[in-house]
Image (tube, rainbow, N blue to C red; front, side):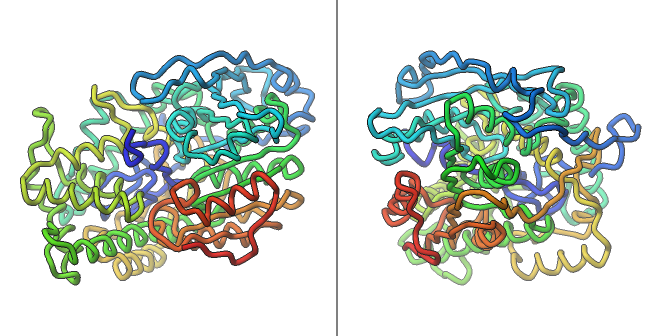
Length: 550
């Protein structure tokens, strides 16, 4: 399978800010608030039915395996069996082993309902050099760890295969685990293709966004109301500790990408004494101000697109023109023009709207220069020179989790649901809104053409049925083993500064830097990065602080 099309392997989406405005691209849909917007959220003060929304109960008692109330979960047996073959992949999934794990829905009340976590294992190739298990998370929130393992396990180094049982799992709420659902496939199709009112009509745009947020919250409450409080990242970290114990490891060895770095950080905070070798690649900063983080990500994508456009302009036949100074603007003008002139595609029932085209373009910016930029040139050429929107639509569908039959996975539902379970920001002050808007317009003038103050004037998850106690904070993980953080200087989705801040916050961490483009660095073809990460995973040898790879 073409690596570029491995959605779970490549689209490692970052943690979303629970804000209406130009929120993290991890949960983006394009619309009136600039080109990179939060999926569905808007911010809570009351439940969906108008009643007061109470906080989540804190977990009391012992932690994990030391809590007597959790013993039945830590002593269950995983019944591993050959996985069914997936006809959508080129590989043979029967070479992998699958199991289901029970965990409490609510760790504060573990004797009540339990839920299932789907787990997959690729066993170590050489029992003589086996170190233990390596748990993995590809990002999201909402990406499937099972799909990640199916699609990318062969990309890991031979040493990792010999030494670790590589474990993938669908976090609570995701995929084949007990899953949340908010929208139907038809509703997703409609929302993904909608361009909304003219951005200049701010009142209409605000009403449009508010209705979408209300409808989404109502759909989540109707279809998954009992799960919504309990799918936050801290609970997933607790699930990982159960899994660590059940696979027989005293310490957790972990490889997490993008949002998976936040998950790894919270695990280290919850269970510092049980950390083994943790690699966090393409980091999210848990302490980041959500407005600053969302602006930073939008700036990152505009800078990445501008670098692509300038490179394109130096090549014969570039659809964006031959002037490097104008190429990026030409591309954005074309994407915006699709609001009034959508293109036909190879699906007679669907046209390429501006919203879908922006999503397809963002999808390709996750890749590096060697793959993503070539594909993005070809995609723009097909649309601009031949009037064919099929490639843009294909990559938008890939990003949105839509298959060729028109069925969606639940990754985009999970994205907002987890974002609201993880953090709910208070409404920013008018001065803060104007400061943020000015910063966005100055640093991302192309991607924020349509942004306005209304996009920032609400907190997040406005119509959600509860209020989470989780807040952004620096994760120190005092007492943990040394942690390896990997950052990419040209990463648009999780800008390099976040990796620097995450590493600085930990009590013990080393930052490894890749000087290049694309989202995340390990297992993407750079031998320097791969060798450094493998040395840590296999031998516990950290790279020297300040190591940079090109």
